[in-house]
Structure formats: C-alpha cells, structure tokens
Amino acid sequence: MTLLLKFLYALIIFISLLFVVTNGAQFLCSDDSDCPRDLCVRNSLTLRCVNYICQCR
Image (cartoon, rainbow, N blue to C red; front, side, top):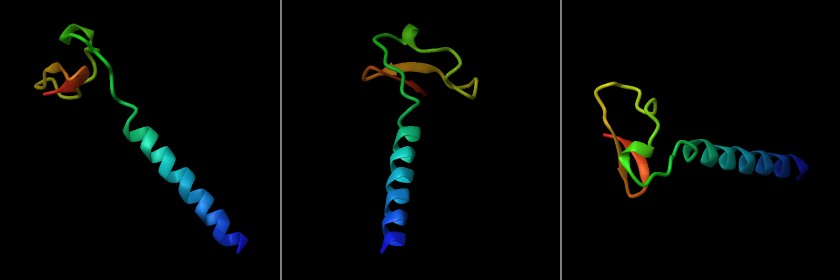
C-alpha cells in the first residue's frame, strides 16, 4: 500500500513538472518589438506578437 502511494506521489510530481516545462516558454507582448530577438531558433522564422504571445512564424 505504501509503495502504491509513493508511486502516485511521484507520478503527480512528474506530471506537474511536465506542465511547468511545456508552458514556460511563453513571452507576453503588445507589439512585435516586445518579443526577444533570440527566441526563434532558425533565422528563417520571423517573430510575431499573436494574441499577446510571442510566436515564431
């Protein structure tokens, strides 16, 4: 029984960390100039402010 509880606690912690990591790369903006220039990995992508979030397009 305690082994099952430890497994469930570890699973909850892992899933919560996964949510934090996947949602951590959003930058809020009001204009294209508010977005950081080094956000896009490839130089062919342009940085745009879409729905107040910086996105590479």
